[in-house]
Length: 158
Image 1 (cartoon, rainbow, N blue to C red):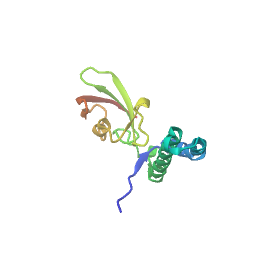
Image 2 (tube, one colour; image 1 turned 60 degrees about the vertical axis):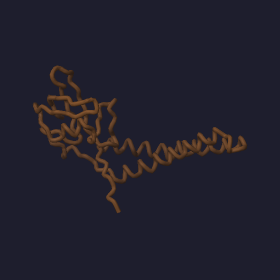
Image 3 (cartoon, rainbow, N blue to C red; image 1 turned 120 degrees about the vertical axis):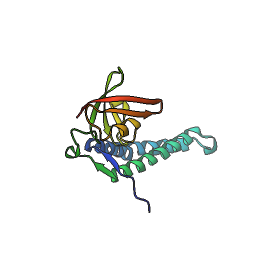
Image 4 (cartoon, rainbow, N blue to C red; image 1 turned 120 degrees about the horizontal axis):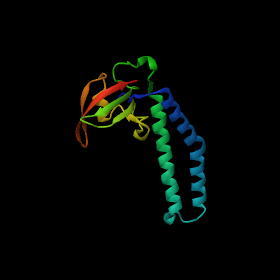
């Protein structure tokens, strides 16, 4: 049997997933079942778009529940003590400047389960994070992105 994938995440990230799982199991699941029940009452299921839509939503919710349970079960919590303050690692907040004259950008490197670029959290599997891992303040790093190669200089690590 293949080994389960480990999902590195912060304690806060795990708690967020647990809250979503609880919501899906206690609230959303019941809402979808109710939608299915109402749609069935409309009669012929072969031409019932409300029923089809509710069944699709049910499949999505159940799939998401399974995914979240797996992620939580295989979570590896990153503790503050594991963070090496002078090198970029999982859980680090990294500020860098795109060379030659770009603006400063700050991202926190998190596991894929917590990634949210709009909140400044990038996955450790992303090209930028993989290029920055293990580097130190002042290092110039070449990053391969889908849009081409870019160079950055690390300004700070927290």
